[in-house]
Image (cartoon, one colour):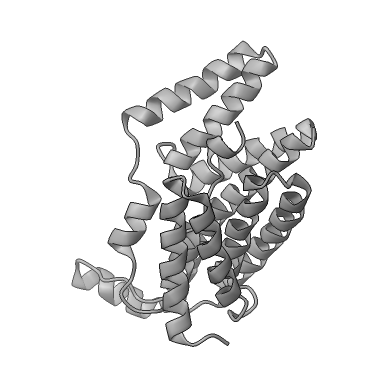
Amino acid sequence: MADVSTEWEWDALSAAALGAYRAARREEAVHLWRRAGQLAQDFPAGDPRRAASENNSALAFLIEQDHDGAVTALSSALSSWSAALEWTRGMAVAAVARSSLYHQRMEQRHVQAYGDVRRSRHREFLAGAAALTRFNLAIARLFRDEDETADCLLAAALAEREQAFGPNNAEVVEMARVLSGRADAAEDDDRMAAYDAKIEAAVKNQASDVLDTWRREQPLEMTDTRRLLAAGYLTAIVHERDFM
């Protein structure tokens, strides 16, 4: 079992790695992700940060064009996300600050019901993070000429990410771009137009970047809610420069 200082270090390393990767500092990002991955091994089974670390470490395989290794690692990461979804059922859910005394009293009277609602939202959030792993796996499978499987993964990833983070999320846009390209290659003009319309609408009203959101909204105490949010916000999607 990791101590709290290890948990804070995982957060810092994972955030720094994501920033480095976005800035095209691949070697730095991989080094930091691997350090975070070593720390994550001490987290309990089902902890969503284990899944996030598996996903992030697997990007090294894509960067190095080891697509067989990427498929194996990302498939394992998807299994870890499934375990994380189960983890939410037993996670400690902190009370939410309420703007009215009435709602505060209602939550105090119905602790279990309110907790179940928040756990359901947490599972949806993690499914949106797992969607990035599903997308990354699809890219690896495209390189292995497993087009049909990859296309199914891409469509599922887009639907899951959009459900959790909304249509204006930057990663939703990235997924839609890939799917638009796939439709173009298949000469499916209607499908390509649908994805292009989704992209255009999102770009006009793009949501806040997830890394910026994490830096701005991260809980100040190490709680299960922080652990879940860290995993979700600090999971990386492969950049197009590494597969285009």
